[in-house]
Image (tube, rainbow, N blue to C red):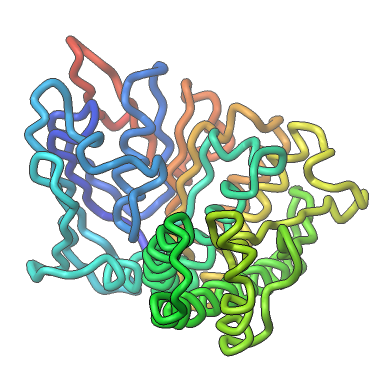
Length: 365
């Protein structure tokens, strides 16, 4: 099992101090809008690499108006072993991590804790720009391979420097060689990680017996095709320099990828489906991600579902809860009222969040 058994939030968002004692069951959190429910889910998302489910800066996570910095502490049960995790930021500085009282990097955190999420801002995933879909796929790739984050950072840093040279119309090849070698290595790793993630998602969806629709997924490129090998990608970057100089940016690479999704049962592109169908396809992918991770690492990930119940009918809501419980996942779910979690019964731990005089409080309910 992978679950938080204790969580403390200190000066994090709306929570001056909140202590949660947990028993490994799914966690249903209810309360009025603005009471701080989503802030708890964001805190849990920071037990994985990256900037959390809101992609906020460390400074933005600090409680206002004090802005003293923030700290999260949790006990993480990983396959029967308990680990103390601390992550914090001092007055806007980059966040730091300790695992069992020893300083650690975020890659180490990713190898220990796997966290996946679905939040309302992702509801328009199929109809908005490709950047959001790439980010969605990269989070899934990261859940399967924590080193995906390091490859992404290396690629983005090298590409920014290459783009600077292109904008300045630098034509000397020596300036580009080392950067393109870095981009080819990291970019090819990113591409392979995405393909692997899609393969695992497709396989997990195919095995599911669920009320949620199946999505056929394909990795596409905005222009041309991603080269088949690292060496071919390096050559493609070299050959594209004159075209890139004219554009002032890099036009070939994994930053030009996109996901094309189709509602399998109907043969309809996901972007053309109804709002409810698009939401159901997203839920299906999150469940598939969790199912595939359970097979890979021996335990399902922690699953964060912000306001998901409000957008599902009663049958699909019950099906979602049954899936989560069958997986054995500690899912953290939010909603405005306890009635949204009635189908869970005593299979979940229920918490209520209230706000008094600008201070959020969490109680067992």
